[in-house]
Image (cartoon, rainbow, N blue to C red):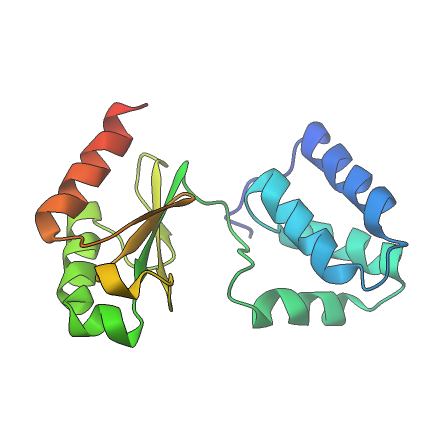
Length: 162
């Protein structure tokens, strides 16, 4: 029994449009997967057969690529994505304590989403912001020198912007 929601007609049409637009491009699999995730926020298992058919590949091949690359999400995520950097520079500046705080403050582990569906938490292995460690990324914005208090402020800002 699947715990992910079925795709709407609009979402299925969006996937069909992506496949029609990109299937004949050179090396189309990654652009297709990125486009689907950009459009839906994740790459639903439900899309694998259509991708496989459009590219004349096996479902196992498509599934293997999706599950191999951690960038591709197979489940819906929250309205806001928060990523905690776990690279060495951030670790040396306290990101391990920050990640413990983040998990506790949000009440979720990595790859989880808060009960209200607002915030998902993921680990990332370098944001390229080493001089301002520890860092997080909130949606597309990188925030540096993040203390536990600053983390709480960022989360409060996200929740108040609803």
